[in-house]
Length: 405
Image 1 (cartoon, helix red, strand yellow):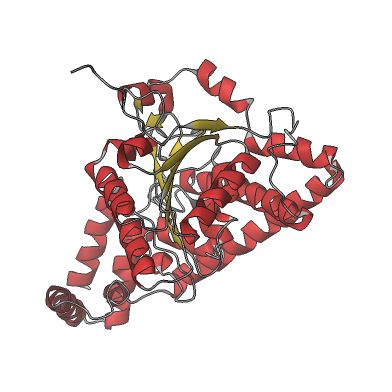
Image 2: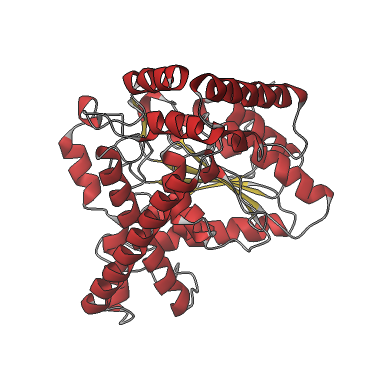
C-alpha cells in the first residue's frame, strides 16, 4: 500500500501589523477606538515605569526579589484589553501589566514583593487568579476554568499567560490536550521571550515555532509579533471570539524579549550577549507604538511628557501607601485566612500552633503578643547593613529579644 499524506486542517501563520518605525499594515489593522489606543499607551507606559521603580526599590532593600517585565508590555496589554470584566485572567509571575489593567492596585505588588501575604489578596469582584510561581502550573487551572465556563454555558473566556519555558512542562501539554478535547473557551498566550532563565528557546524544543504545537492537539494556533500591541490585540480578539462561539481554545505565541533579568537575583550577562539585547532594544514595543500614535495625531511629545509626570506621581503615591500599610500590618495569623473558603484541618492546626507559640514567647519575655509580633516582623522587613531585608542574623537577635526581654 502506498503512503498517503494526511490532510490536517490547521496551519500556523505569523502576524505583524505595526513595524519598528510605527508604520502600519492598513489591511490587517484591527478596528480599535481612539480612546482605547490612548488607554493602551498609558498602561504600557505605567507598566514600564512601575517595573523600573520596583527594580530601584529592590536594589535599595525595600522589597524582595521579583520578575521584571520590561519588553513585555505589548503582549500584556494588547491581549488583556480584549477581555470583558466577566472573563477570567490567569497569570504566571510576569504579567504585571495585565494585572494592573484588570484592577490590581500598585501597592499590592509592593506588599507582596516585600513579603506581606496581604499583597496576594484578590478582590472578589476581579475574575483573576493570583500569580503562579511554579512554571506552567497555571495552564491546568485555566483549562479547569474553561471547562467550568462551558459546563455552565456562560458567555465567558479564560486568558492564560505563560512563558516559552512552560511549554517544556508536562502541565502545559496536559492543559492543551484537555482544553482541545473538551473544546473549552481558553486562550493560551505564550510569551516567547527567548529565554527560560538561562536556557535559550533553541534548547527548549526542536519545533520551528511554539505556535505549531497547537496542531498536535487539534486547536488553532498563531504566532504574532509580541512587541506589536496591535497584532497581539487582533490575534487575541479573534481567539476570544472563536472561543465564545464554541470554536474551542487557541494557542498564541507572542514573540518578544525579556529585556531585563529573569528575576532580580539573576545576572543575564552570564549567558547572553549585549549585542542580542541591543537588537531587541531597537524593537521596543512602547517606542514603536508612540511613533504610530504621533503619526496618527493622537499623541504629541508634550502629551507623552505630561503622562510621564502623572505616572510618576501615581507610582510614588502607591509606594507611600504600601509603606504605610507595612507599618500597620502586625498579625501573622492573617496568612491563613485567604487561601481557602473552608480552611483544611492541617492549616487550622498550624494556625493554632503559631498562635500558641506567639503567646508563649510574649509571656516569657514579659511583653504583649503585639510587641512580640513587631519584633519578629522587624527581623524580616528592616534592611541590614548590606541592604538586604530579613537577614538571618537579625532574626536570631530578635528571637533573643523575645526570649530574654
